Length: 109
Image (cartoon, rainbow, N blue to C red):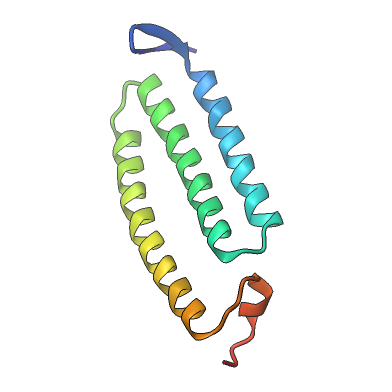
């Protein structure tokens, strides 16, 4: 594997992939364990950013810009998704005081 030159020091791409795997694992645990809808959305964003880090690391290693462009488009879509998700959560919390994701499974108000 070739190394990446970051800030004058050489870093192997495997370090970025390891960091990405750790971040993705933390996000998956957050989605599976936590019951708060806001924490679940943050965990999903963490998993998406871990995937973007993997794309950028491979793109840099292969000297190809397509992975970095795809990561940029993915971040744009993630920002729009976060805005819509937070707006829905604010509206739900305004109507009823639900702090557990199981309370949101019922459609009755």
